[in-house]
Image (tube, rainbow over the protein chains, first blue to last red):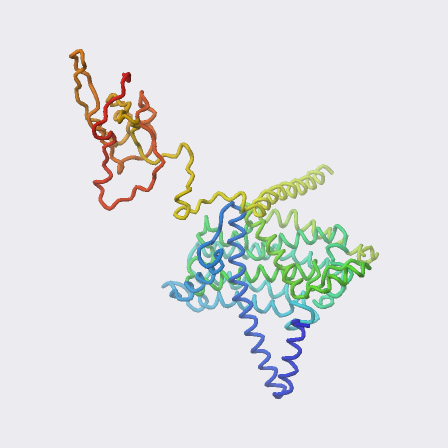
Length: 358
Length: 160
């Protein structure tokens, strides 16, 4: 049967049969790089179109509807425009850091992709500290944002970057704690172990109310971490024009823009892996007939379906809530989310020790 | 313990009001076909529906006998804040041999008009009203100066 697993297996064996192990490995690196870049390009096109359509529907508008059938090629046209635009570097910026920043943000997004499991046995790198790796690397992107804000030599950019720093540093705590609650239940940081532990039901169903609370806190915290509305203080179009990427244009701007959407995809993929079982089909304990029917749907479809469902939820509250003020934002984190998630982690630990989960 | 109760009340209130907001936008997202308010203007020119109170330009109402209701009282000209209307009057001779003031030309400068509706409010005989036409672009600005009373029209019987 057609599956990502078979394709990757056959490519792998063919490469190792025809070339020497070193060459085969290098070619595999190259293939992975091309696949990741291709995935990013497709994600950028699809997610930006999806965001524009979803926002239009929520605001009782039509959204893009002129380029191609139903506006399907709108983002392709936008990308073409951004590619042919001049990549301006303003006069008084720190040239090196200014040009480096968008690439750092982009590379961080690419590196986080490594331990994510896209389908059954289809993963770039199954390290035993997968989740720790993701949470550690994802905080590096704030350096890229700070770099962009500082190098732009512009007070609005700097303000946006500083806000972004404060925001990411504080929201990482509650995101980390809610990730930890699943790690406590699973007993492993490895992505494949986490997914396999959900064979008889996803954690969000198995873990009672504490896991649902952890899930909600996770979604709120990652929305803040990816700098999206209602936590988009780093960009804040109406007060800081565009925050840290005010001075960017052309392809360098496009990299920031793309990185935002790719980050949304990545955090939703992590959320789907932890709480909704990654590629694991919807299984209920011992209902074997039902489980067999669910197994017919390919694992990659399950993964992307769950991820896009979470992306829709994040877009949903982006277009529902107004932007928070910086003090409200920090209040929400330090006075509400952090204490609740700490207490919640305690509850999850009790559940895990006493084996109350299903 | 009172602060703890307030804290929990805060959290639940926040969750409830957030869900309320998301329910509305979710409803719109699912029913976007029914609820959409966008009019795709140049495409739907034929079946374009404008609200009753839409203010496009000032027109004078004429009936089938080419008669209007304007007495030439210049109330609209006085009401207009930026000199859009200029009324030129003449004197008709009534059958009894008396002179009576009447409208000669109703000059309307569309290029100056701000569609404020004050002239329509001021008119004592409802001779003018706002039309729903709004495609006013022309290549020559002289075309924007219009004479509203049709040639050969006269005041309707019984209007004072």
